[in-house]
Image 1: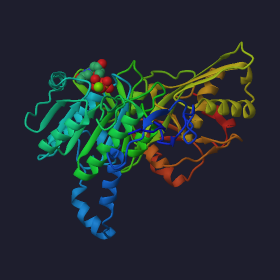
Image 2: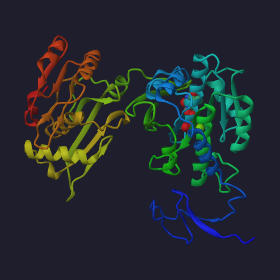
Image 3: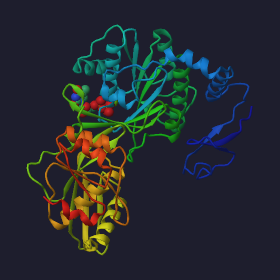
Image 4: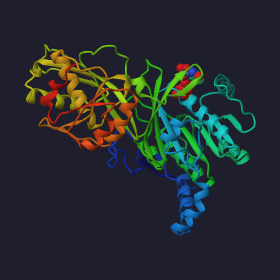
Length: 465
Ligand code: TYD
Ligand code: MG
């Protein structure tokens, strides 16, 4: 039989009879690969069978009320015993969910999932867990478990596999409720001929495991590698398919790690978990502000403190600015941990409303501790840090800035002020610089905190140490 060939895009699945350098639908370059057309009655692509099984599942219907009754008990979240992680997940692990955990090599992904496994076993009596590694041998996993002092011989199973088919056999036999797989790029399925790590493989492996999670009610944790730009390697579609995407990050030189949600079908994506890598694995940091604030004994030029709301939790961070004469025609605006266009904008506001001659100056900006700030509430602190570095004047110790700054220099109110004030009091701050706000709220804190209310950045010199 003569077979015809066609070209399929590995990123979006678009097909064409002719080869093209760039896919017209997803605009990816060099993503088309040649495929042979097979007789559709002979072998169905497994993606098609997955779709069919989904269709079969959804072709029965139920009322919302019934499904809520039936599912209420099945959807009791599993507690991982790691409070930081439970919070990031939106209150624990959802039983038939698929969680993708991305991060740089060596950041501690395998360590984290081993500790999750340990916590799940300790907190749920009946739970059976399976850990499949495509990267390490069973002995290596056992060694790490020893180092982390995890000992559960009866309910925690390990296997070293790279193909999905034997993994499915193991699952049939053991019937685990939670499956850990490390890592996505090492697994492949026999139904596709391309190599592991290839876009088509990643998509197929994810699709098949997703069906497994939903049909057998297994919770799956999948580790994923990230590319140079920090995204999970492979087509974006993989992230669209799964329920939850977590990123595990750190700045390489320090021991703390940040766990953030970028997608969560069962909770907020604003939450941030903070951990420290120690000799005995990851430890939660329940008071992260103490980590991001350096202990200063006296006021320092160019530094301010702000409070950023990460999900439901206010975190205090130190901002640092350095303003120096520039020899360049286009002075530099360099920022780490905050959008550099934001720094250009705030610098322009200072130039216009405080008449600071910053157009001949380089401005370097840094958010200490590797945190990334996106909240406008830190505008005022950022402006104050730049102003302080330029004028070489300092602000009082134990003072925190909160406020959004508009282009006209006005300082605007921010959300969740009470939450931030509560935390400021708890951490022992003495002075709060903030926009004009209702005195009723401030009255509650007046015994512990001194308030300096400003309505425009031009009043910044009011706050000097
Ligand atoms: P690992 O979990 O293997 O990272 P990933 O799976 O993301 O590649 O962690 C590797 C690093 O963590 C390694 O450099 C050693 C360090 N580590 C500790 O510091 N303490 C520990 O208890 C463990 C298990 C690892
Ligand atoms: Mg690993």
